[in-house]
Length: 143
Length: 152
Image 1 (tube, rainbow over the protein chains, first blue to last red):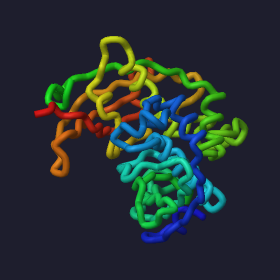
Image 2: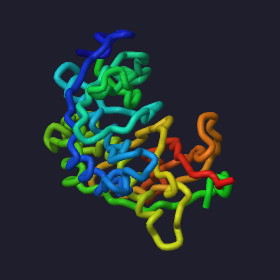
Image 3: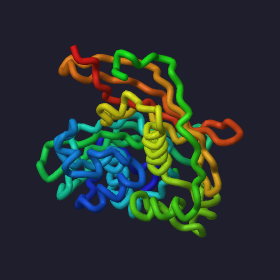
């Protein structure tokens, strides 16, 4: 798929991604070493009410689902950013995530043979209809 | 320190981090396995001309340095009192981060907003940046941190 094959409203589904306690703790130990991402007891007393993944970990897992869904289809030139991300609900050990990524904006590049595709990417857990995060990676696609 | 004590304009240097090829590839194999993040030969042929870090890796290192900064003696940040965030805005990956690139991260308070729904916490907005040794901007975003309010 090239830039011209994307159109507004086109949707790509991704996942599942099974979230384990070990992976939550491993990511947090390296990048986000706060008690509510590392320790069950401390997490119960925190604002999150129990062990939860780092929001950056949720972004990373979302990127993985997004890459797995899009890579076989498109020759991407890399992302240039993410206009917005919202961490709506905690992601817990045992959650199974999936994504719905919808094309919401298209911009041809004036100078290069590619264009930028913006996706609104919703992340759901197995508790359906609960949007976990919304983020909109902007990816360059070859013309 | 509470939300009420946070002053707009306060800027902190969070520290520096040098990205290695091994770490770039290890992160990307797990979370962002696009060829220019994981495969040196494919990366050579890509638009980047070599391996580059996933933008989410660059972001995760911001978090790592912010946590380390808070844990330094005497640096008890108000963000420690809640330590969670409702989200971010305007994240930009401006230049490719290559193996050997050393980025210095900073965080500046640029706004404060109250919440209608709760009285115990409120939001501090920060402009976060990462620059290389030449001062070139590689990465930036607006962060939102939930901070505890002074009890009444």
